[in-house]
Length: 482
Image 1: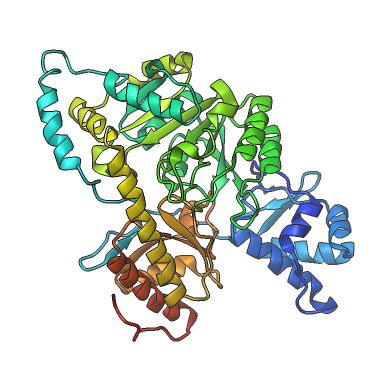
Image 2: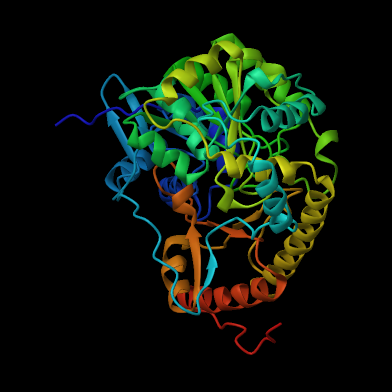
């Protein structure tokens, strides 16, 4: 049976050569094995997503300065191991060996530390906002209570924030939703159907991937480079837009989940131009944009929508900044598109709860509370960075300037095994494979810094013991517990 050719972008020979770096390890006799191992590692790390078309043998041989015989032998090894599939006339592409469906994370047991959720407890002042909302609720009890677009007062505050960040917005361009994920699902249902392609970053937010799959759409990944100067491969996105022709793109350009990367203004301008040229709508997830831990969110780069125009659909949420229990988010889009979204929403729900919207309106008026939250999270971030350096010194990461998590690179591809071992040591973690379109990312793991420093320290100490059990190296079990 002929292999099915999956959808994906193409990587050029010179770019793959740069990615592989010094791939020769065992001398000329081991050249094919070394090259195959180097490519396997890039697949496992998610830098070569499933479906990526590989260069022709001649092109790759020229780029690597190797013989076509060596290239052919390396590809044979990769095909034998299931990392590459080929078809005459269609070339070769990255495959997924032994891919399995990823199920939900195991429930957190008693005494276990939950290191899977990048979210904080309710922000200070929530109880006071609830008390104030109880008084204001009386103003709304006389009407029917259905607000398919959301309360005007809340939409005014959200619109004002976009305007202050450099994207002029009116309340008519805002719709309140039941969280950012609900907002994304509404847009997904309107823009894509079974078999349609959706361009995403690799790695990316796992729940967005699950929503795309649930809609029977096909996620098309473009790899990020956490160590690169900008992080986003804009040329790769351009190529994927032309080759895969996705219905829309889903991007997180502010403190990206899980990498913590942030695209600068120049990169946003280039990306906006690429999207506009392809006439591809983009859903921009701004859930973490207010968690700028090094500066004022208003002085950061303008929203991507300022460069992509009406093609951009922004989704935001109060869950990371204020409290997940509010279950409120929003969509910012053109009035025309928002009108279509409101009509599509009737098939899902009839609006968001009024009382919670009043509470959030009160909370958004207290900018000092959000500033204190950012200061608190900055301390948590530094505590986590210190704990990783102390207990897991061979792990590396780039300290993010915002967001809620560290994206850590491990010396061995053991992320999934570590997650299993960590559970037995009393800490729950999300393996890197959950953030990849087709798994992989086994050298990576996400660690949130949304817990108090004492719990962070204990969680990392337990994680170091689990890592030692997986790698077979001694753990710092006698390290002090904060």
